[in-house]
Image (cartoon, rainbow, N blue to C red; front, side, top):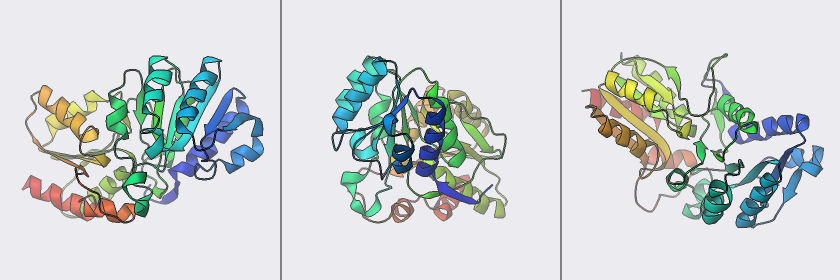
Length: 312
């Protein structure tokens, strides 16, 4: 636990290749993203199971839906910023409305593209896709979750969106951890404060927790890898137990993890101090992924300081 592994994107590609070798029904559709999606080896080893559509994300979604309707298990792989914006109508109609169990994989998600700037950021994908009936949304935190969601997705019978980043990730989970789409994972359970996060920011929550422990504060850390369907039960349990709850996400503060937490907390009339950490409604500062997250108060040090301040 806490050792540095591979980028989740590489684990995705390795796991998908392993699954496709034993299941010839699996097809990958890419939009000039074979390299960035770490699918070069897939193409070399299984050339008949990968289709390249070029820089045409809307076509990628439509073709994926058609292949799925013909009985194939399709993984549509494209940069998240384009897949969940340029192709939004096709996702809504061809995938969700048509009930095609395509796995849409948004690569280099969040602010992984760093200094390429806002045109390449995908801090809207949770918000956009959450509004569509009939699609699940997963953001893996570490190599374990990155691999397990692909294994689970092969037999998943409804549309699924998975987002991956590019940075090597710290191992968070212990051996034997159970992964299930729609069920959050309790990384550690403490008292008084809960840090709930999703995707690559879970690592920052874990590191913040280690800082808090040196101050005599033992937080609960939750990996909410599935944004939809949301694990209401774990949130309600920890909100009732905690004095402070902080959500942390590599996404806009609107329409993502934090707002979903606020919705559930308010509708269940739970009274506690609550804070959403995410990307605010402004032109995002330019810099690396780490620099941007640090700037918006999502460094481990700043998360720990905020936690201690809110606890008083």
